[in-house]
Length: 149
Image 1 (spheres, rainbow, N blue to C red):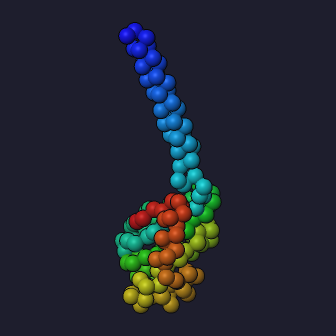
Image 2 (cartoon, one colour):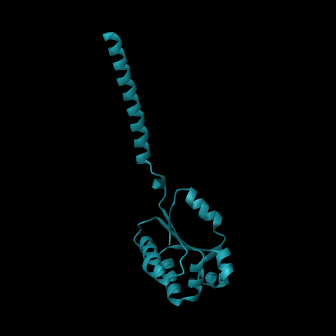
Image 3 (cartoon, one colour):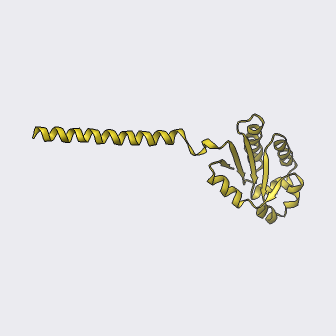
């Protein structure tokens, strides 16, 4: 009986040790390789028509991130009401120009811009107006960091 108990006890210790090693190894591998570790690209999806959101958050972070190189690449996507705000507001247009000078790549959703009738105006500001559903999906699937405002 005693021998049987010792054999079972030893078996349980070995099995538990192997399980701990497997969990530790897979956990360590995950911790050292988070999904966004391979990407130094920040994508900001800007949908708000509120000028304060643009000036006090989106433009400040995007422009500074590009200027001081917090991110290797910064891309701003103008989508929805932000396209109308950009086309109509001179202060927003100045902010867009400053971000472009700092190296922010700026795209606008063509479907949204067409809905608001502002595609030509956005293009005249040096913004690449194109259909953005597929590119946004690719950014999300590739592990790039995407912020939405």
